[in-house]
Amino acid sequence: MDKTELRNEMRTKRNSLGWAEISHYSKNICDKVQGLTEFQNAKRVMIYLPFRNEVDTGYLISSDKQYALPVIDNDRLLICEYSQDLIKNKYGIFEPRDRKEVPVDLIIIPGLAFDMARNRLGYGKGHYDRLLSEMKVPTVALAYDFQIVDQLPAEEHDIKMDKIVTEKRII
Image (cartoon, rainbow, N blue to C red; front, top):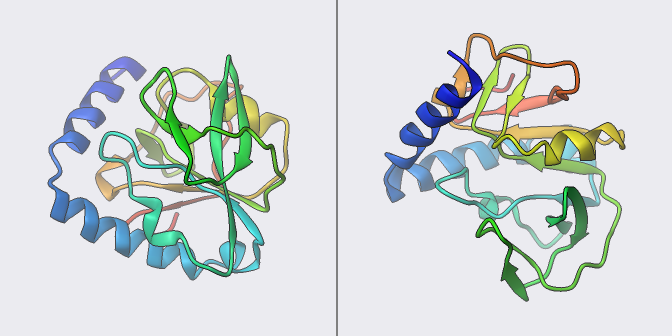
């Protein structure tokens, strides 16, 4: 199966989830993330706001951490201070209106599919791969267990995740 077919299959599966399933799985996944040393040691964490039935990161937000959100600026992904003042970007994803860039200690990443070698298949624009190629910060991808496949068609420029957390396991 090529990347386009796999993206379509995963979008369909993810879109078939109901609100109760998303909520239950997301809480379970986020509870696992909160137990990770990388999360516990991080002062500021870049999270994403869920889009099209992605794992809901709202369960991660706590008062003892600072947060940042990704902001798409042309073909670059910026890491900007979390804010309640949000706007939709050209893809329909919410991001902070104020683009105050900040450093982070951990990056939480979404995706469409992952494999056991910790490869990630995103939406195909390469935003996260470009960002991660420029920094050395631990990465944790969030996924539903059905998004884990045996093997992805990975390319040389694709950046592997440090960990992948699903409702069933940590890879």
